[in-house]
Length: 435
Image (cartoon, rainbow, N blue to C red; front, side):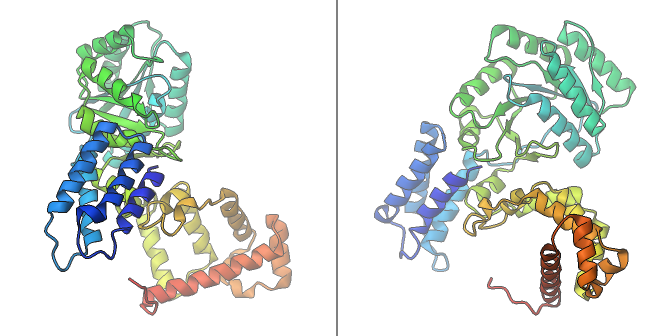
């Protein structure tokens, strides 16, 4: 997401490095490169035009302090303009009313049903809500089945009825929610291949009947320029409170994210960044701007870690690392916790200068992690605690039991010892870093 665009912008800024001051002449190439990068990422032409003009004006009129280098100042101006373009301030989801009613709308195939499940999971984990999913797509039986499957996977109840009127179903769902003390209601509505009068009237009827606290448009983030017309059409009919951009994982250009707020004034509240049920992230404009410019998103990594890693267990492991008593049993426990974070490639991409270090192109085969687990699990408890007792015959037994080779067992033991040494040096401060 945004990688190609971010690389082009970062390269343009880097070309200013070493120059004594910012002038129209020495930033002209950078501005041209930024303009091309934004246009190729499918950012709206008018938005690109205004963005480039704003950056240029502020750069040329900026007073450069002696302590700040021209390229650093230019980077700050670009970042600030990106933040402004993305909406400026973080706009949270309404969560304080009881019950809070949220209606998801959008075109068919945008990911509404999956997003409904992700949202319910997010609300339960982060805000301790008791969500109820409501199956409001009465035209596509597969949508109801899909929502029920998601609900079962997450252990979150799904309300559905065999009725032909969506408003009646939603009203019955509200009664059910109050009786069963659900404090958050997420309505999954029907979509169409394109905006039509029947779709909008049905959504207006539900809106008038239950007055949702949030009316969120779910839209495919890879749509490009057409997304603005879709957002505008739904907004004119429903007065949207926000939108969720889906499918922003992989190589999606994501230019729509840089156009939505500026052209429609509708805040982006979440982005979908994986197919898993925890693949939904709150949208923070400043943090997104930093990711575009390869500054990383440490806060998002921390948020993910806090959601899935057991804090007490992590503290115990840290103490063991410091003391040098961290063993293969602990290593196995750590692997199991790390796996909960999802694909490790996604975490590496959020590190500062990930693209510069090539971390954005790393592919970690889940099978490799499974192989490591199999090797350790084939050891006895004593062998995990004291890997130094692992001689040739033991290693052969472990290799056979795990279905791996003796060479792989030796490689794992070597890597484990190297990791232990490194962690010990970091803990006691003997390892120095070049920053």
